[in-house]
Image (cartoon, rainbow, N blue to C red; front, side):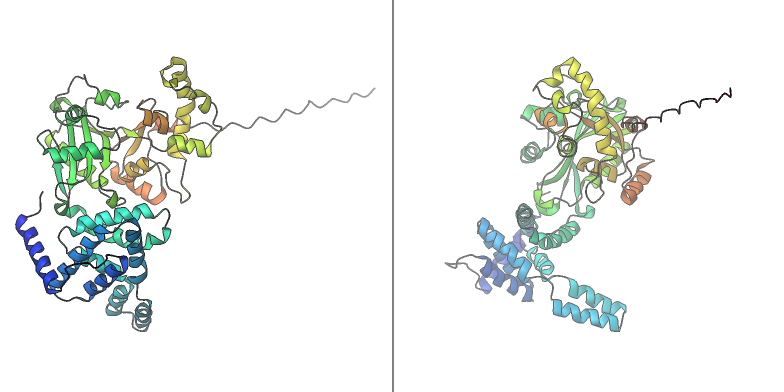
Length: 453
């Protein structure tokens, strides 16, 4: 997974000689967004390979030394000084209207591209360029809530990173107890669903034969995982995370397992948020497992419901009995409260998954969007699937199972993509509250029969 030492040394040599040739030794020159803007302009106008690599390396080296204010100023430089040439674009539009052919369409395409896209491509020439650009986008994403005007810059980052990190460049590796310690440390650090507290905890998840972990890597990021999934081999679809992570459990022989459970998927690089890897990862792992363990007939998840409690609080603050139910910290340990929870929470959860939508009409739960978009079916809602403090806070302990039924994946995906239709098992749909029937109108009083005297 490490970069070729020869290739890395070659790039560094080219960059060093180019910097000397162009007199790019920094000296006492202050580093600022404006000084970087001038170097970026030179990079775009440079013709030689050595000079281009030298400028790219110098820009990225200087960017790393900037403080928070300097980095924000540089993002504004990218937005304001390296956008689309609107005069050139208008001329290309006129030319296309006058002669709408492939040549004028290509010229129009080129004119519409912002200069910063070519700038980012050239910055990627520097040794370690792609890694620094991922860090740069991480900084950009953190700024978007307070600087939404930078979204146009993020669109260019997303466009290019989606190409540089497409499936053809990704390498799937199994993570086990023989994996180098520096990678294992990152698995512990990046686990985002069910925290790994100790090395023994990690060992229980990756060393037994019925516990597997797979990760995607990119050749230019060395031993930095992009995303990883943890898998449990079982004989049935689980209802709680505790049964999968128990310290003292009875292992299952892989050849005797019938079910592969994807119970944790963690993205590792914040700078690649929104660049889709998870669907490729699950499909690749399913293919590998089916090949190696033909006895597996069921592929399911045990997934968190991170937005359920927030949705309830925002849309149904007075939902019948919920706040009274969870008022006591240990409510979930009380038998009567657990029975009441099933009556209250399960119908509301069914509404959340099957009917709740964002302002743009999408399914509201992000984990649901991911699995349903991959063609899975919402199979079961698990009451008290996770009793960790975070899960109780976010979802009152609820978890769900999504089932990847291989014959139905394409159909489910198409319906979800086209109409946001949620593929769900009948048992889930039956949980929806039934609309109250209107009261029957009162029967008319019987007419009195008139009797003549």
